Image (cartoon, rainbow, N blue to C red; front, side):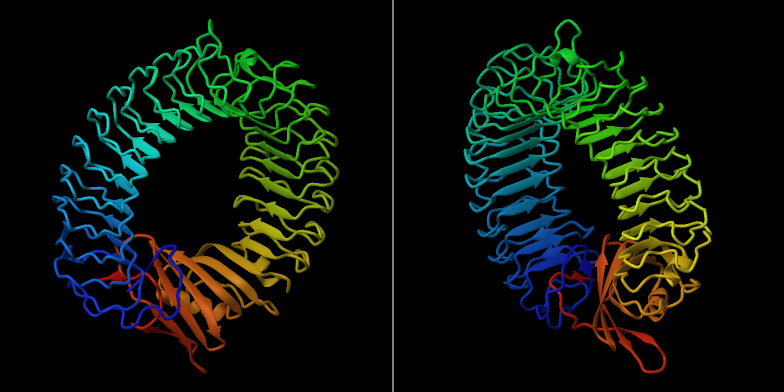
Length: 586
C-alpha cells in the first residue's frame, strides 16, 4: 500500500485499505482517488468491485486492461487507462466522467461510447477517422498525439475550445474548426497552406511545429490571436497586415527573408527569435529574446527604449555604452565574455543580471547599484574584492569554476541568499557571510569552517558539510543534505536547533532509522531515493508517521509508521490502517 507522488494525507479517509493483493475486489471505504498498478491483473468485470466514492481512477498495470460495462462507478470524474487497447463499448465509461486519458487506445470510435459529460480527452496512439457525432457536444479539450486523418466539417464538436494535433498533416478547410476554438496546436509534421476562413475568429493562441513553412496573406490570421508560434523551418515574409493587430507574443525561430523583414504590429510586447532584425522591432516591445549570435554588433538606438526584459543567448561582440536601454529590468547575457566597463549596463531599473559564461574581473562601478539579483555562471573564477559588488545586492549565485577565497567585505552587507557550487573548496572564516544572510547553499568540498561562520539569522542551509551543520544557529528552520545520507554518515545532532524541515536522499530503511536518531528535533522529514520518497511527520514526541510517495511503479512498498522506543531508538513497523487518499494495490 503506497502513495503516489504529490498525493496528500487526508486523515480518516481509508480503513482496512487492502483486502486482496491481486484480485479485482477491494474493500475500501470513502476514498476519492485510487491507483491500480502491477501486479494488478487488469480485469475489472464485477459491478460494485470499486468503491462508489472514487472520483479519480488511474490504472497503470502493465497488463492489458479489460473493463466490463457498468463496473466503473457513477462518481468517477477522471480516468487514466494506461494499457487499454480494446474496443470502447457503450456503457463502459460512466455518465459522470469529465476527463479521460488513454495513451494506448487505438480502436475506431463507437457511437455512444463517450459519455455526454466528457470535457477533456487525450489519446496518444489513436489514429482512426473521426465520424460526425462520435465526440460528445460537452468536449472542451481534445489532444490527439498521432492522429493524421482528414477532418470533416462537424467532426469536431461545437463546444471545443482547445485542440492539439501532434502529427496531423492534412489540409484544414473552412468550417472544419469549431467557431468556439480558442487554442490550436499543430505539431511537428504540419505543413499545409492556411486559407482565409480556415481559422475561426475565436482563436487566441496558435502554434505551428518545426516543419511549417507556408506563406500568409493579410486577413488569413484572425484578429483575435494574441499568441503565435512558428518553428525553425519558417522563413516566410511577414508583411504589413499579415500579423493580427491584437498579437502580444510572437515566437519565430526561423531565419527571416532578408529582402522582406518582418512588420510587427503595435500591440506586440514579447518577441522570441533566433535572428535579430532591428528595423522590425517596434518601440512598444518590452520583452525580447534572441537565440543566435548577431552578425553585427548592437548600436545605440537598435533596441526599443521600452524594453524591460532582454535575453541574448549568444553574443560575441563587445557591448558599448548607451547600447542597452535604461528601461531594462532584467538582462541575461548567456554567452558574453568581455570586460564590463562602467556605464555599459543601464543603472536606473536593472535589478536582475545573468552572466552565464562571463569570466572577467569585476571592478567597482561596473555593476549598477540597482542590482538585486546576480548570477555569475559556470566559467567565473575571479577575485571578489571588497566594493566590486553592488551595495544593495540580495541574491548571488556563482557557478562551478569559482574557487577564490571570500574575505570579509567581499560580499555586500545586504546579501540574503548565497549559492556556491560543489567545487568551491575555500575556507569559510567568521565575518565573511553578511549578517542579513538567511539562505546559504554550499554543497562543500572539505571546506574549513570556523565555529561562528554562519550568521545568527540564517534560516535555510543546503550543504554536505558536517562542519556547517554542527554550527547551525538556533534560527535555522530548513536543512537540506545534498548527498545521500546513509548509516556511515558522520553528522552529529545539532545543539539547540529545532528544524521545521529536513530533506535528503536515502538508500534503505536502515538509513531512515539512522537519520531519525541523528536529527531527532525535526517536524517534517522529506526523503528521496530509488524512485520513491518518504514524508515523515512528527505526530508527538514519541510517534512519527511516514508516508511513502512512489515516483515510479516498479517497486511497490508498504506504508510505515515509526514508533520510538525508550531505549532502543526508532523501530520500523508495517501497518494497514494509515489514513490517506490514494493507494496502490499489489
